[in-house]
Image (cartoon, rainbow, N blue to C red; front, side, top):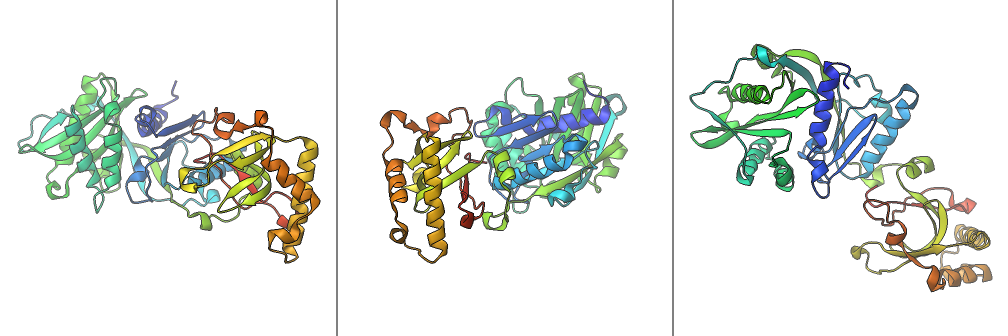
Length: 415
């Protein structure tokens, strides 16, 4: 299934990034033949800790699709409002990330070793290593890992609290370890079994207990767990500072990883986007807005590519966006677009009060929008029941108003 060792290491890392997401409410995994995206749904910018649970990995884009897939994926991630870390491993290091305005961050060595070449952990006079078995122990594990940030990352504690049932399940491929110093939890580590590789992840020690070789003890304990599970190969990602430590333990460098942070980009700073880009991530065209107040109230928009009238059902925007929709025929659509063209023309001429632009065509269009046959009305959420996360309105500037073309697109919640 895997062509070589580096492919197995990358597959292990990618699955480690998303396996808990698959079994947790509110988290998603997008997996294609050439990419894996793990989205925890946890908010936070780069440096908050949330980015270690919002991961892009194992990119293997075909040459003819390379730049398009790279730029569109980065574009989608920026629209989520959450920070992501895109990790380029040994087999994706040559992607032109600069074309998507992504800048290299941390660099780490992908290191591996045969389990037979690593000595057993053995007893340590100041550290006892145990596998996590209870929610309380998992909370201790999360607290140690969170201390890698200053101040400690509350998002790390939140994540492990949400995924606790999956992390503690008997069939979980991850084994979480804690090192206790005089019965106090001070060190943590994880072994993840996948793709014929035992990946060692998140070796951490509380600041007050560092420089006592506890990290090495946790690494050897993880290797022991891999040995007990019948795995022949262990792998770990190491910083430049830690690389010599792992070499002494028997690891060698198999490749390099580079992180490309995808920070949160405020909506007002995202710049103009093309119609093709927006449609590719689930937005649809809005032909006419007949009424707008802090957002669209009534008009004509595409639903799954087919023009429909829409009318907002709820008036309080904090309750969400809910619409009734029904089909529009070609003749009515043409009238609506002509009414919109006349309205835009009047607006651009300086008539900024709606009643100044009233005409028979627009009045007729408004009455039709408000008075659809009830048998044709469809609740918007029902009409789009196949969309996983439900739909809300999403309108962004698009097109040339003076031309009379629609000025917005209509999109999926969370796009």
